[in-house]
Length: 177
Image (cartoon, rainbow, N blue to C red; front, side, top):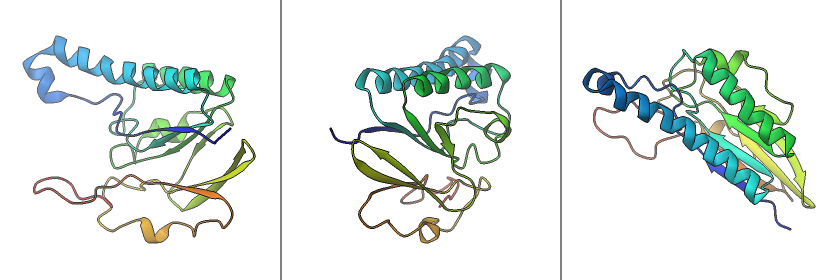
């Protein structure tokens, strides 16, 4: 059986939706709940497909303040994955680089959160060695490419690089990696 994983990024839990909230508070609440439901659907997919891992490539949260409601929500979703034996590999992106929750919340041992230094983690499943390489944003701005900082691929293993980046900038948009 092959090694299988689900990839996601840019969920933006607890996005402030300030401009939308000023125009329509009910709609802002509905959209805010949608990101939570999207994440539940991703976890449901992982469970239904019996994947080996979930890769979260940055911006799971939005900003440095995350509510306790969200902390409990994430803990419950990570526990669901843990109980099914599904590993989680997560990096912080530009929107959740400073998130206190990602630094304080205690997740099950099956959850790996990559820090601000390059790291590689070996996962063996289905008779295959899979090396996950990750590097979280240390701050919201990373104008230079982070790619040269990543570890060299491990020979004989399937190598998965986890990165949060933009390939090309857009005028007026923040530059990141």
